[in-house]
Amino acid sequence: MNLTLKLISLLLFGSISLIELNSSIFEMFISKIIEHKVNVMHPGISDSESLEYTLIEVSDETEELCFYMDVESVVCGSKECRVDVVRVFWDELGQFSKLEIQNNAVLEKNDGIPFTDDDYQKLNGILRDVNSPLQNFYKDELVNDSHANAADAYSGATVVINKNAIVEGAVWTCYTLWHWVNGDVISYIRSISAKKYNKEDMRELLVVSDVKYRVFALEQSILNKWFERESIEQVLKMPFNSKEEIQLTMLYIENIKVEDYYKAINKLFKIYDKEQKLTLLNALLKTKQPLSQFFLDNFSSSLLQLESYQNIDLILKLFHSKNSKSLQVNNNVLKLLDNNSFLVSRNAYYFLKKQDLDKNGIKKVKLFKAKNKTRL
Image (tube, rainbow, N blue to C red; front, side):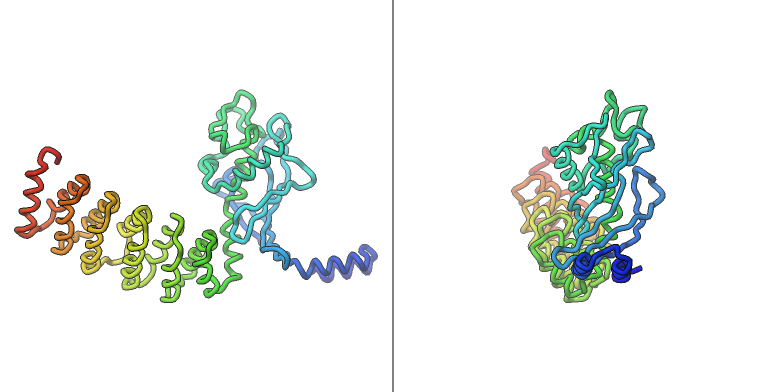
């Protein structure tokens, strides 16, 4: 029965007044509730089988789109566990918003001690940490104790994980809720939300100030294979602030046409700082795009503008892995023998020893060896 028929039925049978009906109809029009059946894994329950849960999408005229799901507060196999229903809320990008404990319950630590306000505040911080060490443990690895099915660590048990990552006395509650909050449901939420944006909307999101929306738009551009020229140009306009954005950008351009790939690499290399260049160069080393000798020749000129040993080292590894033995590459590497950093010049020397050099190049390498023989 849909909501409208349900409200009319309640009115006819006297279970709701006209005033209440008008209020309910108003709420019906300003809020839209959609149920989504999702299959999610939880390592505290099983590492091989998923469970079906109901994810609720709430679209409200007065608030932003949000999602929630009712889950168990703690997963364990002991009767000593008191399991409460917790409602977890996320925003439209799957970022954790808040918890609501259902049925006026309170979360408890071991020995039945209720959470304090400080405990709840710490728990919220733990759940927002997407890189929490909780992701690296199975449930029974969290405590060093033979009673691994108790609600939480008994007195005398050793908590293996850093105590900053948990509310003390509630290690498994933190573990259970962290995996609900940061688990499979996030991909469902992002997929549902993505359907509300078209390609043009996503292009606009690529350059907004909020990094989480830029990442979202970049992910969707990759998933939807939006690799046409207009989308590429917009991706290259992104204000790159995070490592995640740069990694996704490398994944994006890995899928574009090779001529566009060359242009993108050259443009990004010019605007990236030395740390960002490291990510780009590592991606170049692993790329499946064909790197032409013309591209490598031109790219070798960038060696002369770099000061970072790590950047130069990766470029030399790139030339070695691509078996680049061109005259232009060798000439640019030869200039590094005069670099102010001996680490750089020595690296260039060992690269050049394996190259087919002309007479001038061989002479320069021999002079460098003679000058630095005690340091090589």
